[in-house]
Amino acid sequence: MNTPAKLAAYGAALVLVAGGAWGVGAAVGPLRAEPAASGPAASGPAAGHGDDHAATGSADDGHGDGAGDGHSDAPPAGLASSEGGYTLVPATTTLPAGTTTTFAFRITGRDGAAVTGFDVAHDKRMHLVVVRRDTTGFQHVHPDMAADGTWSVPLTLPEAGSYRVFADFAPTGGRPTTLGADISVPGPFEPRAHQPSWTAEVDGYQVRLTGRLSAGHVAPVRLTVAKDGGPVTDLEPYLGSYGHLVVLREGDLGYLHVHPGQGAAGPEIPFGVEVPTAGTYRLFLDFQHAGVVRTAEFTVEVGRDH
Image (cartoon, rainbow, N blue to C red):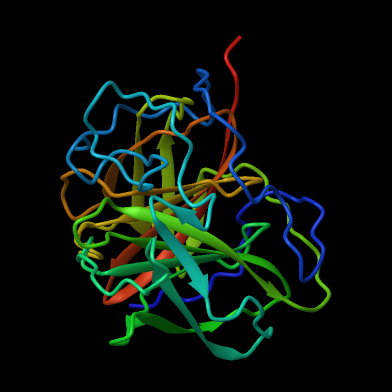
């Protein structure tokens, strides 16, 4: 199910050269956790997180299981195109602006052959997240795979710039993995900056983020959905849960893919989110209501405690 492209802010203003990468395109070394927090205080702790969809990612998979000590020194996922013997190989690294074009890619193994065995994870065998490197134009789509292992999906990238694509998958018999690659869309453009935001408005829905993010620790947060001033209590399952959250770190676009804990069908969706370092993060919540998937976007600064 394709989430429409959102031409919304999703990052910071860095120097971006059209047709080239900007930001850091590789891992920045060990990401040591330092206590930090930002944003308004929550009205109370989020409940219901802690199942196998709840926590944050690791270098291996961009996900987590909510177990353990609530602390991880591993970097987020998606910083490399090859990891654990798997490689993301796009059929092209250049796409036109403003035109719907089929984007194709393969996941290859250590022998260079295309992998064709994938497990269903969160209702799909492949999740593809696409965002410009200034975090504009977030899309979350689900490609189809041909018999030869080639995945394809129609993509419309409305504006020029350098985009990051994240292939999020679980190879049969292997660990969940997220790989990233850059795609260039030629043409002039201006990168966009985004101020911290803990509320979002999308198609008449109001979504509020509450909680306290702390670097290196799982933090309970809530996303509360309202419409026309009233709570939405009949959210519909999307990808096996009532909400789906992607978190990207500004600069290198370190990737975290978060699913909520058990909860009711709104208005609150609880998550456990661990960000690895201080910095600015963009949070993208996909939720479904009245048969339509919408995306609410937030910008959160996580500072350092001294």
